[in-house]
Image (cartoon, rainbow, N blue to C red; front, side):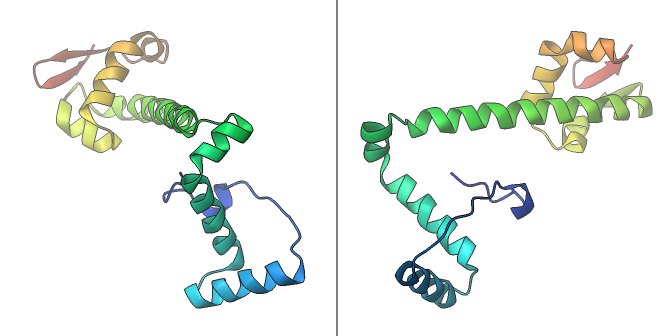
Length: 141
């Protein structure tokens, strides 16, 4: 499943050659949709992958659900690590802050913020940030 939030420079690139027929079809498709040829090919591949999970499973032993879960876990871990770094920087600005305000400032859900405070307590403390939750407040100790 392609991510709409990814910048094109962040996406991996594959170079391949087309014969005259395929090149003409791709070029015509791109013109009709007012998009680049590479975007047209990317969409074709994506649509084929989503439309053929049985072929992928039977011919290549690829389960799209497994791949989706792996990507979600990687993305989630990246969000956690980036949020920890932001939290360390922001912690210099407060002694206490409302839970909702900090979650909004970090651009993460309350659930992720709770996870960071509880599950990544040791990492935060190694980075010099000791936090406690008291009601609707996050207190820096």
